[in-house]
Length: 124
Image (cartoon, rainbow, N blue to C red; front, top):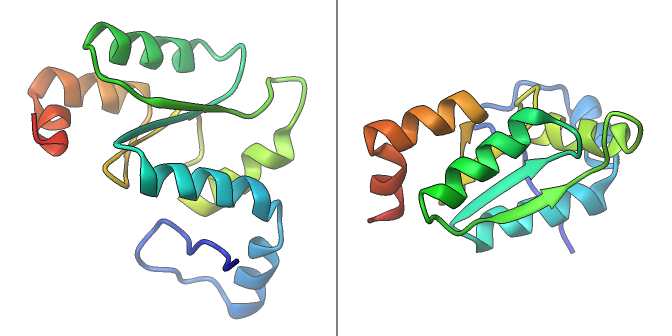
């Protein structure tokens, strides 16, 4: 099984840094990468984070099905979340992916729902 490529287009990391990052919790990165490739909408989050709960509520209210992947809380699994952050290039949670592209977090998702760009990306 190959290691998922970083999500961001221009990878300016040194080969040694890229290799070290690829070895950091590859099972987590592989699970997220697989879900992002497979499912139309994916939310990656953590327990106890109010913005994760808000973005899930926004998508539910908009009747947009999504896959939710949760990695720990403020009290655990920070290394797994760090691996996801390094892969995506996004520093916070939630991380919302639509049709394989990271659209951002709560505020970005709310704006995309309001302006119709999220539904347009889904072909709705």
